[in-house]
Length: 409
Image 1 (cartoon, helix red, strand yellow):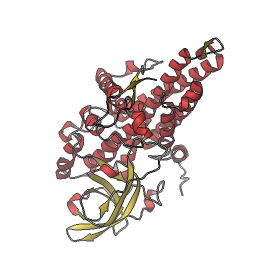
Image 2 (tube, one colour):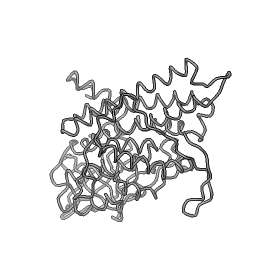
Image 3 (cartoon, one colour):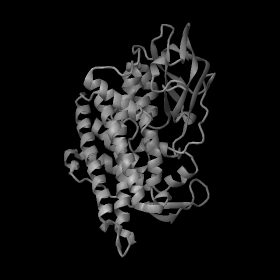
Image 4 (spheres, helix red, strand yellow):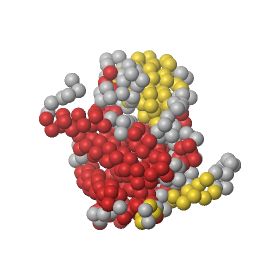
């Protein structure tokens, strides 16, 4: 929940309304006792940054459907780019639990801000760290970690989303390079990215990963406009028209869907944590509002139906917190399976969206205004429910895992 104020303008722009972030953390089952001091310090640093740099301006940027690109540098400074990538390569050198709590705090501010960070870390830095040559790692990762380079990830195509194996983007051998043709769609960060990790089929039909740099002839990144969701996140396409990609830019060993799907697992893990942040922000706002808003001579929070909503909200948040913590524990041991990550992503995002809707009702008509963050979170979560694997696809992943039967065929 916010208190209104007036800004002095950002980078010479006109004055605009800003908000003071009053958020207080909610931990009904004392899950914090399961976190290390390092985890809590990382979370506190990110929370302070969100309160100071994101919350005061995010409603305005969302209204204008403009990405606050000046925040990229700040995200790098607080260690949000590749928190679990080794420091040698520009990452934070922390564990997967730290990555999770950082994503949670960022999404508490806005899903689009978390997307800016998780794409950079999980979908760009991670595949380069995991699959690139040592020369490629040293060329790209330190600059990505510092925010000097911004990256994006190209897998989804205009006609192929949930079925990436049918992609038509392709490369053909041309001596010391490959000629890349095709297009990718719904790409976070693409219009401002310095490089893209792109997946395409080679002449044998094998899926290969590569780094495509801005400035390569035939490579363009048109922006997508008209979004009602993730309005403070910049989204675009990747278009390749006979782009000549040097062979040293192609990941040397990895072939097939294993490469891109491993990146998606890393990103989905972050989303499973991040969605809790959005839910916590909605709950925090609704709880505070319910104590302040007087109707029929008493606070809304004194009515049984309001207490029912709030009690169910904190119950679902607590369950999601425990699910994410256990998943983080498994991830730290290298034991978290893609199916387990799918379950957490699906459950926690759906939970957050339902809580946003209930919080909107508690706020009444004020819930649709920008005085409160709830409607913005709700719109954002509609996208989070779909990207990195849709709600239904993740359900089928769980179904296949428990039955051993493939519903995708």
